[in-house]
Length: 122
Image 1 (cartoon, rainbow, N blue to C red):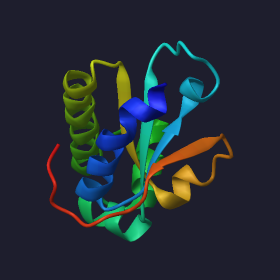
Image 2: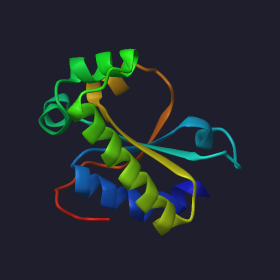
Image 3: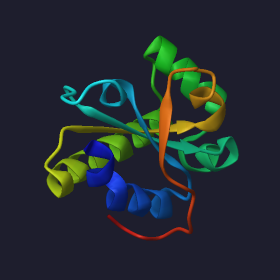
């Protein structure tokens, strides 16, 4: 089962990003998903420290007119996705989202790991 395979990885991500880690998307509904969507839901204030204003991040996502902070976010998500592919041998799509944005969607989420301390590299 996917959840069992992701347990250690999710705990590591929760420590690294100091936020809860969720399984979302089709992996919740099928045994053979195309990919596995992993979501780190970061408190808005912490997200803003790393990737700029949440409001600007959302606007840039809608318009496609990205600033440096949005590109930094994209590089981090891509870097972590590639690392997760190597570690798990699964097609993982990893994203970090600000809490207010993530919670505005009512799609199902399965908590994989709670928030932990920082500075544990995957």
